[in-house]
Structures are given as structure tokens and as C-alpha cells.
Length: 286
Ligand SMILES: [Zn+2]
Ligand SMILES: [Zn+2]
Image (cartoon, rainbow, N blue to C red; front, side):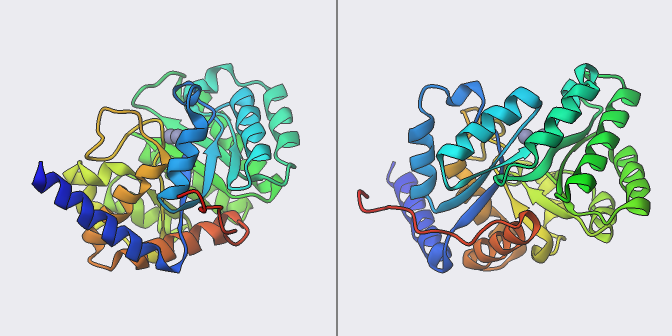
């Protein structure tokens, strides 16, 4: 008990020091989803108290993109990506893309995503996923927005489609929930992309091993809440406040001070997504 308390006190001290330059951005989470239905405001408050100054809520289809946008209209610190998740590629229609193209004009929409390939779950055939992914990349180029890519068990095809797209457009985007091989990371970096580091670095040693080799100046950080909670919250609902566990773990892996992880990943997120500077949250009630 006392050991646990002292750990969390150390963590809190580290984190407060880390945030001396401002705050942090959770670049990927799903605030519209059902697990947040009953206590969303409390989740947002806890995130703000943990120093999360901006959040990008990611759409997985037209309805979820619209729902995320409604939240962004109510909260200054929420921004949105609109897209069709590879899980739902089978049901995607041309009308969906036209709808997304319209929604993407909203000033709080900062990216197209998530889009990509998921050959682990394979909810839609590979060819369909590839077509929908390609369509998403085109929409990003057309809308002059960066993209947010989901890639699971599909490194070769992800790279092939990105390289084909790079022939036509300047690529700007991120591989979210990065948990791939070092060679995949290197190829993505050489295409000019960022990699977003998930809570998995707190408990998956193979991911830790690769992330240790990555350049901080090309990394973002995310929770993917409500999924994939970092240690010590594994198995529970994830929430944006837990991005600090990932930030502290990343600092340890890269052997840099936590404030550098906070300030560099914030700078990267603001550059890529063209986010406004932080506004001071009202913390008078703390
Ligand atoms: Zn994803
Ligand atoms: Zn996601």
C-alpha cells in the first residue's frame, strides 16, 4: 500500500515538472463512443486536471464523425478527425465520402481518419479495405488535411498505398497506435509521416524495443481511449487523463526528461494538425 502510494506520488511530481512548459495533446481518442455516455464531462475534467490541453476525437464513420463534431462544438479543447475505419469499409458508400467531404470543411475538423487497413480482424475483404483507404487518402489531399492511419497486420500494403499516394500528393499524416516493426517505422518516417505512440509501451516489450529507436521529433502521443488502457489501468476503460502514463513511459524509454516528451509531442501535434496555441483552462476549482 505505502509502496503504491509513493510510486504515484513520484509519478505526480514527475508529471507536474513535465508540464511546466504547458500541457499535452491526446492525439487520438474516441470521445463519442458509448463507454463515455454516462460520465463524459467528468472524463474531460480529469483529463484537463492531468494537463491534457487538447484532444482529437476520431471518427470511425459518418455518424461517429458527426457525433465527435458535436462534442467539439461544445468544447474548445476538442478537435476532430473524420473518416471511415477499416472495420467498416465493407459498408462504405460514395455518399459517405461526399458527406465526409462536407463535414471536413468544419473549422474544428483537423484531419481525415481514421482510415487504413486491419488484416487482424479482417471485418471487410482486403480489396475493399484498400479501396476505402485509398479514397480516404484522396479525400485528405482534396481537403488539404493530414490523415490518421490505422494499420494492423498490414504493413506492406499500407506502405504500398502510401507510396502510390506520394506520387500524386504531398503526404502529411500519422500512423496511429504505432506498434509495428522498426523497418515499417523507418519507411513511414522516410515518407514524412509521424508515428503516434500508444499506452501499449507500458506493457508490450516488443513495442518498447522498437519505440526506443524512434526519434522524439517525429512522435505524437495518444490514448485511443476508451480502448487499450496503459498500465496500471489495463483491462479498465481507458480515458484521456491516462496519456500521462504513456508520456512518462516514453520519456523512460527514450531516456529524456518528461518535460521534453510533453513539449516535443505537443509541438509535433500542433504542427501536423495545425492546432491553435493552448488556452488556459479554468482550474480555479482545483
Ligand atoms: Zn485505430
Ligand atoms: Zn482509434
